[in-house]
Length: 247
Ligand code: NAP
Image (cartoon, rainbow, N blue to C red; front, side, top):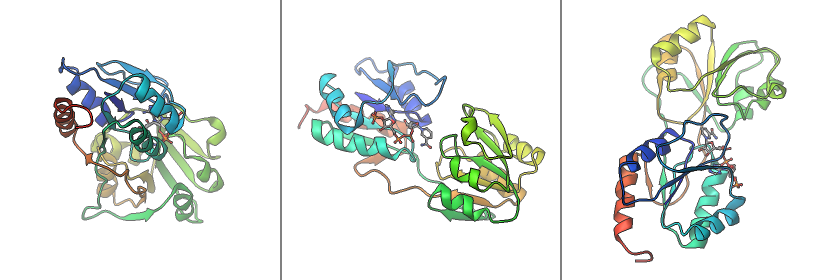
């Protein structure tokens, strides 16, 4: 079985599968992170070459089952997975964490993309906490009146950085207390984040501090059978391993 990963959910599923002698799982990373936390199962790193390349990989490696456990904002690989699984006749399950929903006390402006998030910051200079990773920074270069605190696992390309930026390289999850301390120390006035779901320490901290959040919404989820819990994905794998292929 092939697991398309790069998420906490994929890693959790890998840990569950490590104790299952009857499976031969392979976890795939795109290779975006310089030092990925390697799982306790075999893994590979790098793209497949589009949907056709992934379909060819599924056939070549005689993959029986495909789990798309990629990040909710990794749209292209999910499209590829859907097309490749259909082409190769391989059953596919989407493992994706649910989105966050606002709680009492939250002050969210929901936007559809990063360009809209940068515009929504407004004309007046603000101190902005950007927790969006390091690949989508370009729109904020144009909103150069703001000061940015940018957090990502690996340092961003300096060419993408806005003029006024402090960079923190750190790997989550982060507790509410640590997030709150960081926001207070850096005098953050507004946070920009993607609706990734999962650990929500930064949202709790923003709520506690009364800070507004500019929330970039998800695009429509991949189609097909979907679970949010790695244990449910394991149950799906077990059920499909018992049935002969094509049954
Ligand atoms: P993307 O735009 O959907 O994918 C771009 C290309 O990267 C794909 O076409 C594929 O290349 C390759 N790729 C993506 N995931 C792969 C995987 N698990 N194994 C092998 N190749 C993969 O993805 P992205 O937004 O750049 O994200 C890259 C990876 O980082 C994903 O695996 C995702 O789970 C993880 N991640 C993304 C985010 C985010 O906010 N986007 C956040 C946390 C983690 P080919 O076409 O050559 O096969």
